[in-house]
Image 1 (cartoon, rainbow, N blue to C red):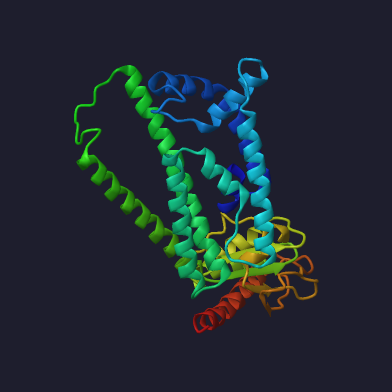
Image 2 (cartoon, rainbow, N blue to C red; image 1 turned 90 degrees about the horizontal axis):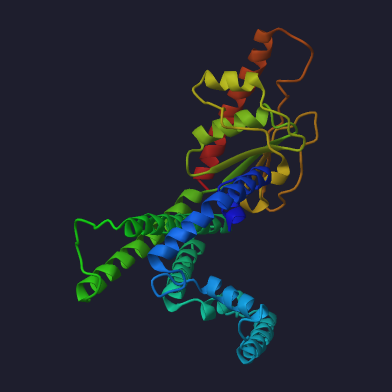
Amino acid sequence: QDLKTGYLVGATPRNQQIVEIIGAVVAAFVMSPVLMLLHKAYVIGSEKMLAPQATLFAKLAQALMGQGELPWGLIGAGAAMGVAIVVADAVLEKRQSRFRLHLMPIAVGIYLPFMMAVPILLGGLIQWLVLNRVTASRNETAARHAVHRGVLVSSGLIAGEAIAGILLAGVIVAGVSLPVHVLSEEGLTMDITSLVMLAGLLWAMYRLSSSAADEGGQGVLFLCVANSARSQMAEGLARSVLGEGCRVYSAGSQPTQVRPEARQVMTEIGIDLADQRSKGVEEISASDVDVVVTLCAEEVCPTGFDKARKLNWAMEDPAGGEAESEEERLARFRKTRDELKERLGRLAEELKNG
């Protein structure tokens, strides 16, 4: 889940591994006191704090240590059910049926408590509604963008709920009495209020995911060899010229680093490349790209992205050539920048008109 979320926000594998290591070290010092606090406040595994996974593994561990017996009848029935589901799903796949029986969701639905399975079901229904709405009028990229937004929002809700639970546990253990009681813990008023709040949350998630599809637009990728000058300036300009309706990327087959001259001439027209870096082609997902613009002249540009529309804007590398003064070098970068801006203006019109 951590790696999936990192991928969605554009984190590189290296940075994800660094954060995973930091997370493991921090968790070693944080998890124990947090779990003790939660157990003292709610009692982990009780009705106040259900812990299906922890309870399951605890019972397995106790049986293996001789402190209980495993329910072999239930285990056998589950195994037989699992085999039957896999076989049935294979038949459905062979028939190219739109209805499938994926084993993992079924297993999760069986062992999770009802109060935890329902939100998963509702989230799946929201995704289905969003995808039906998006795929009816947009491309696959927009649909994926909508799902990514929904996953990120859901991840935030899960993290927020966990933090809120820990904070409330601290209040309970400290014996602090909340000064205001807006609603009673039980009763019709609480039930209606909860349903209204749930409906509002579901609607908000649907709207957020749908709006992400509207923002998805087309993905435009600028390619050269070093991803240091032409493609970097093109990426910065495209974000300004094409607007938020397009997703813009740049990459190279042999990435180095962004040229300081490129940063300087772009700053002159109010575009900051400080957050951009040189990237390899392998970092760009082909499914995110609808238009590929190659900028190589003498060099051989990277290939791939077979399903994308190809445009060739052959331009000389402003960083190449013989040694020259700084002003002459900057003049070459400005010339490339201005040519890119002109071509991007035409591309924006083409994309706008379909």
